Length: 176
Image 1 (spheres, one colour):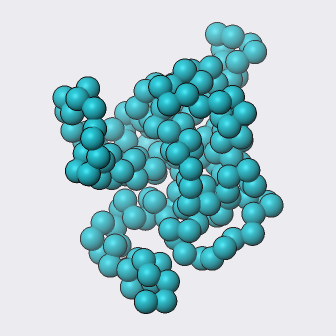
Image 2: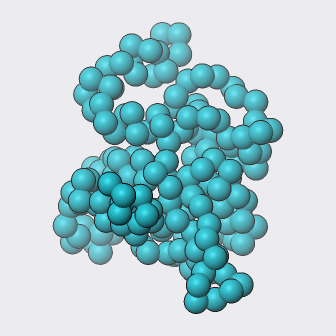
């Protein structure tokens, strides 16, 4: 099976099934990276798209930060620290540094407080929306999802993406 799920045929098949999300996923994970070792230092293990994605998202914290940006309205360092999962400050700092170096998030000065920055998703970060939605769908099928999440209406991918663009990349939305 030489590479299993990383076979080019499997990627081509996935592109036929879901061309836009797969293209977005591949765009989001393109370029390497890794936990604790950022892109410039990272030696890639392989060219497998799953492996390349795991170089960036291979721990629970990185996608939870993206989740908090997308769905929970968190934009400041202290807000991420208050997530239910209890990320430590050193891990949060490392993962934010990784997300910044990979171009998944950006920072801007907070106009309401000169010592704070506001984190925002880039287009590359927004391209992870289908990934998070698929992880969520899988969890609904196979994991004991809490009742508070079961009562939420399903998300419309296009509508959610437009809302996220308005919140995170407003200048690009205004120009389109």
